[in-house]
Amino acid sequence: IAAFLDPKTYPFLNDDDRKIAKKLLFKKLKNTSAANVNLPPTSTNSTENPSNPLYQLAIMCGHTVSFTSLSISQRPITLDEELSTYIQSVRTATSFQEFWSSNEKVLPRLARLVRRTNISPITSVASEALFSVANFLSRKQRSGLSSRTLRYLLVLKNRHLLDKLEQNY
Image 1 (cartoon, helix red, strand yellow):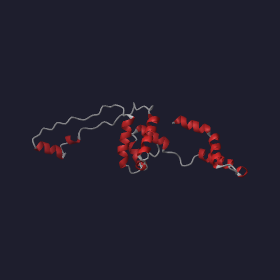
Image 2 (tube, rainbow, N blue to C red):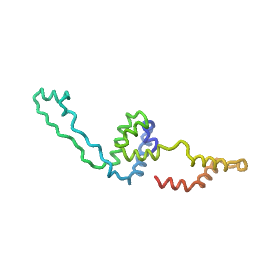
Image 3 (spheres, rainbow, N blue to C red):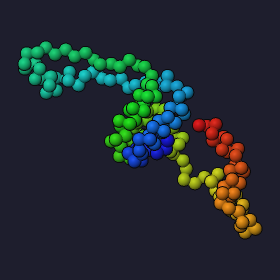
Image 4 (cartoon, rainbow, N blue to C red):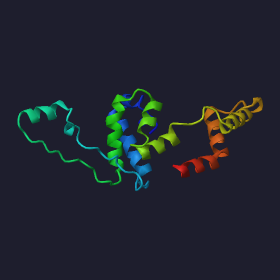
């Protein structure tokens, strides 16, 4: 999911990875509400502007030009529409931060998920504590432990953190 939502790594994913990421995104975001998230309203058609060359050509040719304003009903955007918008706009992305700061209003659910999955502190107390525990477990007296056993010991010791993490997602 993190690679899928990063505009820099998205082009490097193969089709299978993209399909898997979409399924995971739908699974994670299926219960999120978009009731307060509306599509941005469109303004009047740009060809209606008298300074528009197309409008001027139509007037010179003797055509009466009447444009109706195209307004989208203010319905909540679906997750599928949000993903489609992301896939279309990710092609022109220059950087991760610029992309998500400019698209957080258009892609609100994905932006919330990006904040949870892709943006994390470089160091934290939890990671420092984990390294300290790993150092204690693999001390000189226990040097016979394999890397697999050490990994299992760390997982067992911090199972409550893993449970809490899974509940947040």
